[in-house]
Image 1 (cartoon, rainbow, N blue to C red):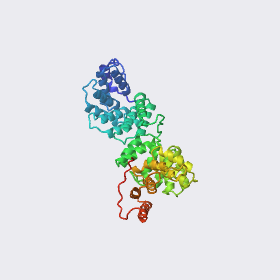
Image 2: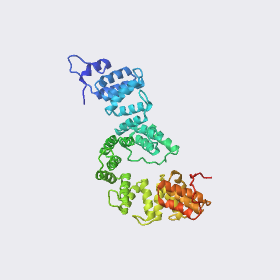
Image 3: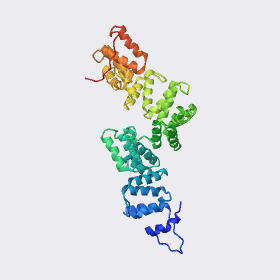
Image 4: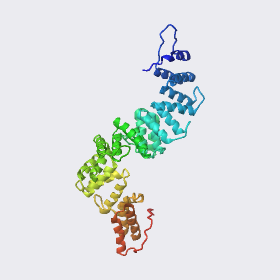
Amino acid sequence: MKKWLSLLLILAMICGICGVHAEEEPITFTADEIKKAAWKAIDEKSYEKALAYFELIAERGDAGGQYGLGYLYYMGLGVAQDYEKAAEYSRLAAAQGEVDALYGYGLLCYEGSGMERSFEKAMEYWCKSAALGGCDAYEAIGELFRDGEGVEQNDKKAADYFLKAVELGETEEAQACFDKMVKEGRIPADYVMDPDIDPMCELGLMAVNHKDYDRALEYYGKAAEAGSRRGIYNLGVLYLNDLGVEQSDEKGMEYITRAAAAGYPLANTALGNFYWLGEGVEQSSEKAAEYYAIAAEQGEVTAQSMLGYMYYAGEGVGKDYDKAISYYQAAAAQGDRMSFSNLGWAYYEGNGVEQSYEKAMEYSMKTAPLGEYHACDTIAILYRDGLGVEQDVEKAADLFWMAWTLSGDQRFKDEYDQLIKEGKIPADYTPKEVSFETK
């Protein structure tokens, strides 16, 4: 550990840590010992003494000393409060990877203290602190996700970061934040933390959103080196899509296969998609179903939805309406639009459930207003035939037209044209914008 021999006499004279006689061998102190003495002085409200300690080591470039000075200037302890100096010292310490300084500088960015306010910068520094185990940073990131500041609002991620902070020892405030979300109905009381939350991957995603793929590669690479399944998976995505690296299907598949083998749900879903579509591998509905089943068991929503469709259609697996409905319901419980639409169709046909045109309408109405064209088609059929609703051919025509314009699928245009052919709407009929309001 580095010794600060040249500081001995000054330290002893100012702080009274020890006495030194000229003829004696000097007693040496490490930077860590000086920092410990400085924080003890703060606890004892001896702020001038703490200032002297921190200055001694900060001028030699010690990150802990720089952070300590930043803290004193931020709080106005032993010095006049000065946010700009606080920001400068904290920035210097953060640049050296000091975990508390990374958190502290992020806080200054969040507040706009001594600098222009920036939620994104706060997120950046807090993620770097969290990656080094900073529990305060995990809680702060949770608050950003909870409030949608600098990131897309996400209750689940907020809960994940609050719970991770609790796990690391930041129990009181983080637990209170989590409990409040439960009380507000934003997350269930039995919510389980996602094991794949990773601050470096959050930074990678931010970089991708800014199209800074070199930086994304750096962050995902660091996450992967640390064993993050999410980081490994996202490296594969970068290679497959020529983002920050030379495009390589081979490397992309290698990383995604590694992540899948480690049990990362999205990676298994991705492999299912590759086999389903025959992209990079020989098409195999059977293999697609195998990978979807692994991911679906882990609760991955797309895999659940796809496996539901495969059981309903009998593709890659034996037709089984009961299993199809079970997977659709699991995915719909997570808000999957296609599964709501598919449940609506199942109720229309009466496969795996008791036929109910009212239920068909109910489930289809959950996603048709959001642009899910299959749901629009189901509702159009119900209005065309007067099933569970009062017959309204014009509304049916409007919905067939909407489904066609949203998807480009000729089947929906054919249904619209059939209404003209049967004389149910005039040839020069002008489709109207559909209102999904219920009366």
